[in-house]
Length: 500
Picture (spheres, rainbow, N blue to C red):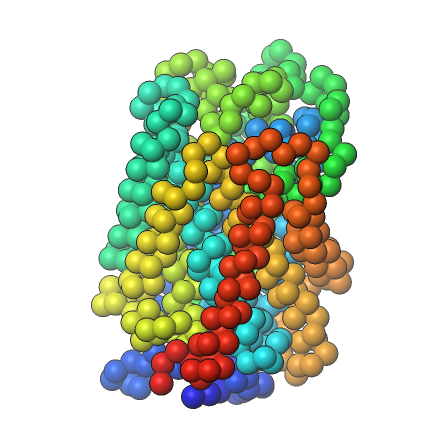
């Protein structure tokens, strides 16, 4: 049956949502009702400004900054262009973050793009939110979590053996599986403790990046730079090289929309969402650019290229010697990336939880239920299971880069559609209260980037000598999106919703 989904205006009451309906949209399915009150069950608002900012920073800072610099350097061909790409990624991410600040404060309900696409594109009924939910739940979120989990295993193995261990990839994956299970158990049964642990691990991550920057600055003063000799020599001119690099840069910056998916748990969201999201992104972007500069101050270009996904470990080995560089710091980096998995699992489970509440998924009452521990336990279990599938199934060797690319494609497709929807709603729903209004240039940059990231991956690169074809990741992601459209037709049009 069709159940009206009301988008509430935000009034000046500290960010609480009033019951005054400004626009009513049609959605398929039903919210999960509390058995005693017959009202939709809600998660507690446990997040404030600083814990919200910790989630943003903790979600952004993950395996990307510790593992992708060598892959980005290999893609663009030079140290100078690598730095340009990192700065460009920061600028584009700020633009997308600003657009999502308007969306989140205008429609302050958990679910992210699911809510925004439903409001902007109500016809065909629930098509875009349905496809987004399936793509995010089955491709975008678990692939990114799998990549972070695998890198956590890489650094734990590095700390255990004192060297990069390409031959022990399955041991790294086993550790990644254990990491995913640990994060699920923490969020499922120890909600407040998990939030506190996320905050502590976020501090560890920030301190690690500050240490990288400090070491790079100190080494630069003492002996000069090593990697900035002829900074732009060998720069690639092929557009596909920059798509490959930007997918990895945007993967490293991803996470600034984390609170949009769990805004129902954020206190005073109209005030705290913009501050936490933009503040967390700006802090992280500054540390990222300076950390990359530090890598190239301490290491020469060849060393960064050869470091593969353990570039931070090689950096600290060069700076501090074997004990600290090969044992202590890699363990801390492993804990830092574990914190990123915790934040990512938190956000992914909330998207699944909200999709189930709207009736987009089978067994909605189970998937959208809240456990006695005040957590979406079943949604967490499903997110964990999908993450483990992505950890163990890709072929060895290029698995990390493949996971980033396949997850990045649907992310940017729906980023672009959400911002297009934002522009549509400025005309079609003028009466919606907008506590924050995104700049026109921010919206334009986000849409243009989304088009670039969705089209150019199908352009053949200058060299395609990898084990996985260049078109495999975007084609697989696009094929799943098309399959989701078929499932939408069956689930929503033919069956009139997954549950009667």
